[in-house]
Length: 225
Length: 239
Image (cartoon, rainbow over all chains, first blue to last red; front, side, top):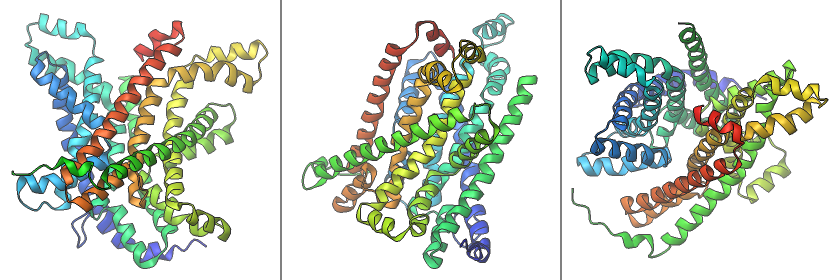
C-alpha cells in the first residue's frame, strides 16, 4: 500500500531543493534555519542582557519586546513582516528575507529569556568576587558570568534551536520553497500525501532527534566538568 | 512611510463577526486539542516512568517522534494523508462535518500531547523515588500509588511549565489556517483580503492573541498559588 516510488522519483527535488536550497527556486530549510539560529541567538544575547540592566529605558522596552513576542503566534509575526516590510522599505522583499527577519525577531525573544535565566543562575557572589578582584562590570560579565552562564544554558539553547528548526516549516505559508513546500509541490502533481508527508516527517525527525541526542551528550559532559 | 489608517474596517461590514467567529473557532479547537493533549500527555508521561520496558519504549517512541516533527507537517499529514486510508463511511462523515477542523484538532492534540508528556515526565521524576516506595510499603498498588500519591503532587509541580505549554498550544492553533480552519489568524487574513487593510486587520488579531495569552497566564498564576502544597512551594520557586 505504501508506494515509495514517489519518494525515490522526487528525492532530488525534495532534498536538494527543499532541504538544502540548491535547486532552481530560492528556498531550502537549512539555508533558512542556520542563519536564523545564529542571528536569533545573537540578538537574544543582547535582549537577555538588556532585560537585566539597571537602566530602565533599556530594560523596560526589552521586557515589553519579550512579553509581546511570547504572547503572539509565529504565523502572525510572519504575516506582519510579509505586509509591513515592503511598505517600510519601499521595495519588494523576497520570501527569504521576510522569513529570516520574522524568525530572527521572534526567536530572539525566546533566546533572550534563556540568556536571562542563564545569567541569573550564576550566583551573585561570582560578580562580587570578580569586582572585588578589580574587574569592571563589563569584564566581570564577559570573563566570569557569561562563560558559566553559557554552560548552564546549553540544554535550553539546543531545545530552542530544535524548535526554530521545526518552525522554519512555517515559511512555506508565504511561498518559500523549503522541505514542506517542496513536498506540497510534489504532492500537487503526484497525489501521494501519506507517503510524502511521512517522508518529510522522518527527514525533519532525523535532524531534530540527532540535535537532541547531541544536546544530551553535551549536557552530561558539562555536568562532569 | 505614508499609510492612511482606517480602523473602521474592523467594525464595519462583516469584519467584526469574522473576528468573533475566528476567536470562537480558535478557542474551540484549542480546548478540544488541549483535552486530547492532556490525556495523551498524562498517559504517555506516566508510562515512561513505569517499571515495564515495552510500555516505556512505546511511550518514548510516541513522544520522540511526534514532538520532533513540525506541527505544520502533522497538519498536512492528518488532513491530506490519513483520511484517504479510512473506511468510506468515516470519510463521508468527516467531510460532511468539517474534516479540516477535526484533522487540525487531532494534529494539534497529538503533537502537544507529546510535548506535554515531557513536562509531566519531568514532574513525576522530580518527585523523590522514596514517595513511591513508601506508597508501596503501606500497601498501595502501582496504580493506586500513581493515582493517589505521585500524580497529585506531580500535577501541582507542573502547573507553570504546563501553563506555558498550553499557551503554546493556543498560539500554535494558528497553524491550522494552512488547512483552512477558519480560526483567528485565518479570519484576520480574510479581513485583509476583503478590505486590503493589512495593518488594521493584523493589529486586531495580534491584540486578541495577546489579551488571551496574558489573561490565561494571570489566571494560572493565581491557581498555582491557590493549590500549592505548603511544603512544596519553595521547590517550585527554586526549580
